Image (cartoon, rainbow, N blue to C red; front, side, top):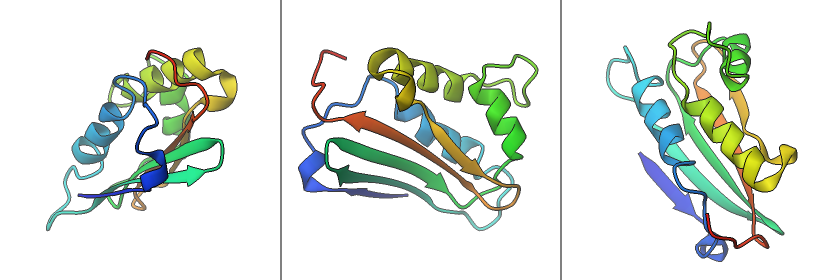
Length: 125
């Protein structure tokens, strides 16, 4: 596990329970069946008016279509989890539709989940 946070974004609040499920998924699902361990990285960068947060693993990955169905909240999705859909929905409800999750994945190639948090909306989250 590695964590890299730009000092400029340390005061930016992240909505409650929006980062934890992503890290949990990277560990629980990304490292499933992996021998010899793997790596989970959380990187938070300064991007002008926003903080960009990436949670990525070098694990199993998944079919991109499965990831899309998960974000859509499709009850027939594999694994039955609701973490990605919940975080995506919360981010969109708080900041608007342009702030949903972006998931990059492929079978055997790990998964990267990106989210953006505006710096100017320091509201109670």
